[in-house]
Image (cartoon, rainbow, N blue to C red; front, side, top):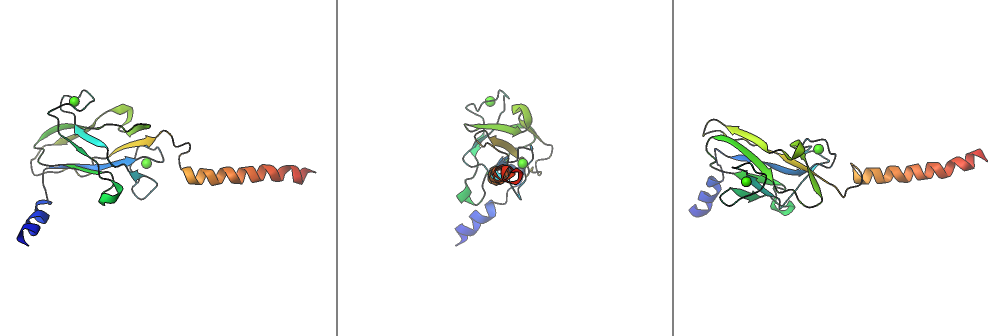
Length: 156
Ligand SMILES: [Ca+2]
Ligand SMILES: [Ca+2]
């Protein structure tokens, strides 16, 4: 029993960088956690120490949580120390990063080893998604088609 309690306690960690990798479904470069944005799981997140835009050996990396993990898109780096950190993701295939823009790293500065940054969020949008809000736009299209069909009937 005590072993289990120890593990729970160790999850309360200070001096960490955490956030959510999200599917920026409305493409506004902001994390709308109440919707329509969703988490993006199984994405490689890394501290790009040499800031060359790719994960190298010796650079700290992790993977964002899956939908089933209970922390969809979530990630955390613990005991990072102090300094300025360039957080990047390996953008998944058919996605484009929206936050930060232009594939820039998310720059996080920690000046005190007891501080944590909890909202280091990075967004990407699905390039295969034809509309900003898939389902709604689909319904709009159907409505438009019905309206077009109705017009000739009214005129004749
Ligand atoms: Ca958004
Ligand atoms: Ca690197």
